[in-house]
Image 1 (cartoon, one colour):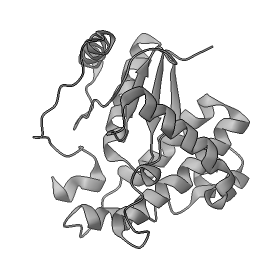
Image 2 (cartoon, rainbow, N blue to C red):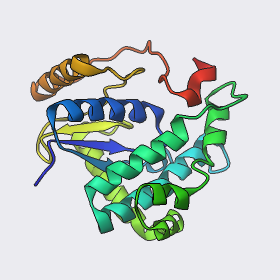
Image 3 (cartoon, one colour):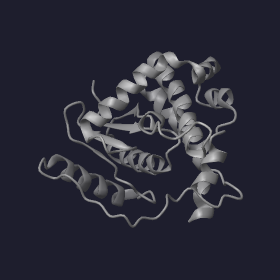
Image 4 (cartoon, rainbow, N blue to C red):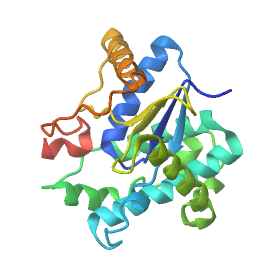
Length: 222
């Protein structure tokens, strides 16, 4: 059966990580079903050279999405959600010492997680899935999912992208949150967001002033 909500994610995106925590908070309180699907920042931003910090961290995201795609193909959506939780924790919930800007953080995070087989064991998945990091045969499925996200939300978006009532329900980029709302506040925000999404004439609500995601990896930049 289709999920109630689809969240298109790239494991290296801190904004997506915070949004996913919010969605998990809502899921725990309302029993909505959530499917995690890949959207590749590397495929969306090919202009960044692989030897640049952003290019390197986006490439790492693609490698990890290959593992997620291999997991989805063999073990289904629940296993992907479990894997993403561990990937995001290893990438974002650790301090980055000596980082002065986003490039510093990206350069350091391009090597995270260091132990993918160990992480897979913790996710109760075969360690052989780690071989997918270099297996480009998964890229076609990742690109197709990325294209689906763009077809639903528009070209000028990143991650996360949410779809309510997939595949035909409304989609949009965001919401971008700096902190995870908890309890009833999380549910209220979800219902408000869904109300806006389901109002078809609504297009965009945006402000450029924002706090950085409240995660340890960005603590030195906050």
